[in-house]
Figure 1 (cartoon, rainbow, N blue to C red):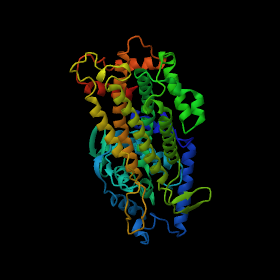
Figure 2 (cartoon, one colour):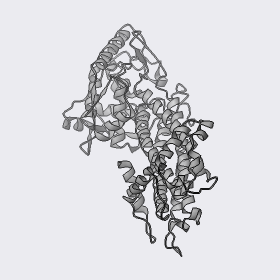
Figure 3 (tube, rainbow, N blue to C red):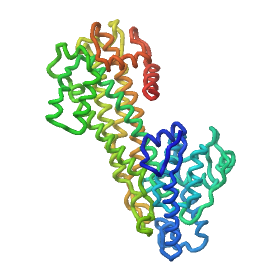
Length: 489
């Protein structure tokens, strides 16, 4: 199985497959033609005496420093001099996502990277040699400090993982049948000056959030069954009266899950709590935020965002700010808030389900009563999870200081915005699992109730991981197993 770069757009699903399934990357012939053309234009501009940032000048505050001797050697110096990241090493799958993301960006042809160096990076990914990359060191004005670890491995320096073992990078290359890359002018900067960390992690986060969102819908529908919600709130005319983002579509999806439920013929309350009544608008807002985040990532995956940029159509090289990603950071700040809202409404339904004798359900969802704690202790876990999500939803994209002698006086913090959003998804999954457990228990405690065709399948999915709670028992293993099933399905 392969994914072809350079012929048609690269998607978030492509990046996830490469990162998690070791899918091999192939490169289209037309992409190589762009690389060759861009390199020719770059070399011609350099030979003409044009000052080109990072090729014959220093970087950042050293912009006015001319580099006239050993221009190729300067690229290695440039890479080594930015190896200043810290923090825990990135995971194998995230590293692969970053490598695939940088390759995708490079196929647009704007970097001027030497085709042989591009191929070296391609082989590094396909032979599964993974640089050991620190996680802290980028403020979103390009991920140079973090990508330095990738570039160092390419030239045989630093450390890299191969077949599950971390080696000195030169040894890892040798074991994989590869040789250290020989950098030409600007090749070092072409490897570094991109937002590949933010974009690679963002691609994985959006893929995960889209999958989990479907389970959120299923949990909401099963809670509707357990709490005897009034399905009239899903009537299309109500949604069309205020067609907020995604609201009509989300009401339709919830109604489809409930299709065939006894709720449609049962006597219901005139108005349910907002955690049931407002599901379409809350889910619609999340659907809209996910759409925007996906668009922001896929724009970056298929764009030429280098500085300086080789403009192939005009055959010239110009400095640019295309590496800057405020729209990406804002999309993930928004997504983090939308996830927090969705998690909060899931938590609210859990509290409704597990409270004191609501909607005819036994107190704490325990069938034995008495001193049985039932599901009530799990309320604390849900609230703790929600607090962690809310903490991560606090915006960070304005938290920067001017650096590099004031040359870089603005930043986006996109790596941190994306990372905390990705962390929220794991916490959100646990809340959804809690709601699913409670909603399935509530359905079991409603003898004679008939679920819809969709919610019946959801109930069975839960019961495949967790048996009904009769007497008090620890539910941690049930939660873990259910959450894992949500990832694997």
